[in-house]
Length: 410
Image (tube, rainbow, N blue to C red; front, side, top):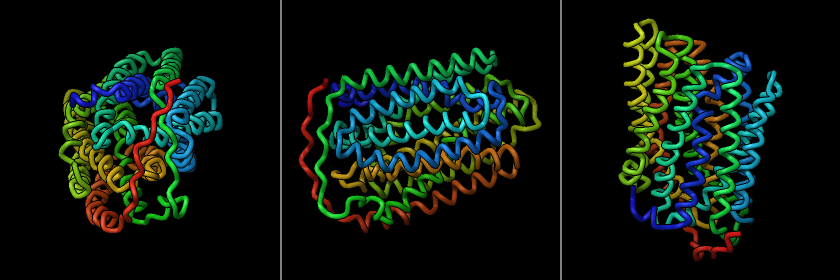
């Protein structure tokens, strides 16, 4: 781990808060869909539809909070979103039908999108000259937390009782509250003054919006391992159910080991463009291997699934490094929250459309749908380099303000 990251107190606070948050998230990412389909007994199609509705709401909330974090201070906004997310997640235990499910996941998704937006100015402020590297480090730590959460979720899936699933939900909510408490030790960042010109400049930046859309399409890949693969293992293969946690752990260990290194090699928008292209090819290969795990012996299915997950995760490393680089490098300092929030709309697009799309293609349609999904990722990767060049050429020069003053920690 880069030594400079560990020397700065505020960076350690961000890392600690993020670690606890993702420890809870690892529970939900690994077994959340199965909680609603196996414990609550909702049809997979309804789960995909509800998650899509929640994702669309998150798109709207994210943009509003981006600007608020720039102008009102990011730390307090971020902490508040964590508390709201904890309350919404705790509400999962009360879900007994489709509409209560929609209400709970909408509240949780909106709070998550708002928190992601509010955290971006903190990363840029405390990230030094290369906030992209801090973002890569945070993602590596994120996957440590997710991997530990995935181990616990593996026990939940293996037990398979309603009580076990509800215990998982409670642990997730508690982790969010603890994360918010740790975050209060972070020195608050004074709001950034607004620059002249239009207020919502990010939504007028067409090249940046195109990159947002492309990154959003490729971000559907994050749902492959958390939505499509668990449902595929349970419904289409003879592989043991504990392999769901094994696939999650395989991916997270690789991210922990190599995300910071991958981020170091992607150090310019042009390098980010090339990384997008390589990621698309990796996703195409992985999506071509995954459907072959159906109809073969359990040991062979497990070996093939793990191989595909390794290849998919290599693509994930390149995709994440590319997104970190182009989103920060092409965003003006005075509108960091707004720009990175708009870029986060891509992830919101994946949250909204990804689960339903993957369930329709890969689970309902089956093997051909996996090939279509891989082709979608590959074509998106090919479209990214010209889009990055366009955004880089058309980036208007913005005066960078002096670093914001730190306020008290209380």
